[in-house]
Image (cartoon, rainbow, N blue to C red):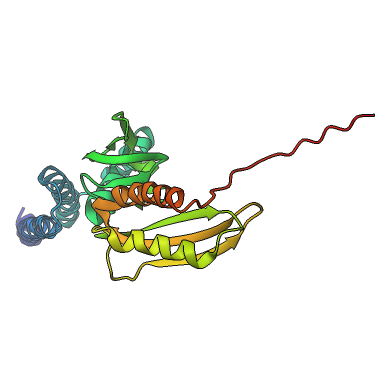
Length: 268
């Protein structure tokens, strides 16, 4: 009995130190996990990430870190955590396989919100769909087409393809081609098109508009027109130039050729 008491004291001292270390790990680990959570929220707030998403992500990271801290504390007092880690790993794998599609959309939604390739109201071509972005959620993005159809696109489908944002920049270039008959002088057409461009108030002077003969086609000579305008005025300028060019060509009796086929009848 006398020999047992020193051993109990020695074991109690050793276990007490381990218990103190485990408690210290829990306290410090919780503080670190909270600090990381606050840092994530702060970074996401700066990037103007949705509050719901930032809260969910920060809580997820905090939970993962705290589980790691608990396992480290249990290991410190001599409890084998290998089986716990195996169970957690197996459960995570099973959940991941079951929710593979949803997790893929979740990750893609997080990237969309984080890197902001487009925002609400932008006109985009993404995921095989074109239209204005009406809603961005963590799993899907809603796009309204020009004929007012709402299309819900999985975020993974958007991020796995090419995204074209037509309204991301403040200005856009309008590219048009006008074909006239070969009998028309090139300088005359260039003067008419330049006159139309100079009169239009929505066309920017810088960059300078471009009008040149660009191609000798099968039945027409084709003039290339490139002008810059504000993004919101793109379609107004586009249709105005076409309409004005037709009116001016008609006034000047300039022929606008169209495909024709000559049929020759041979009598035998």
